[in-house]
Length: 230
Image (cartoon, rainbow, N blue to C red):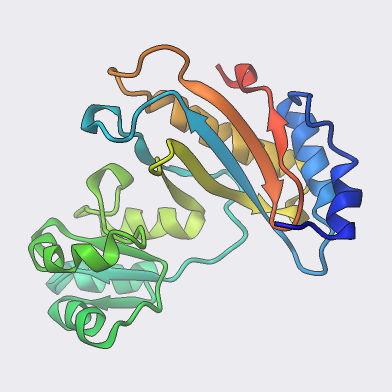
């Protein structure tokens, strides 16, 4: 893909042969995120595991200390008192069979996260082929299948993100906006990296963190010295 003149100029600020300290990388990503909109900053981490094996999957969730800069719309699937609890906690959408049917029949996806009580998971099973590829299927490891819906909603609103390995053994996650400034971005990066390191599968052999980099939406990738997190 051909890059524009603006990208080429920004790329000159980054030395591709250098592994930057987290603080330096956070500073650089703010300097290279100069678009006319508030660019999202993403962290990309390549792991030394094989996602084809169930015992080498890496998945979980973490509350970023400064959030992501984006308010997520929450759908809670629950009945009775738990549904009322979800409404009080601030969930945008609350329901049970009616919401499942709305997704299935109307292809409705005006939400970013689904939180479900365990008794609703049987109903959601038939939507696995639709929700799975979009990363929307609730999961106990991510804290989105739970009876404590108040805590789950509060955490999502506070900046909780889910991380998971893709087919190429890389985790891609937002860690804030350029407007956050270097210090907050660095805090968020450290929180995410600590969670990923803690989630290392017992079956993983050899070097776990192969490499990691950070980039703004329209900016160049900046390599980070991953040994600073271990």
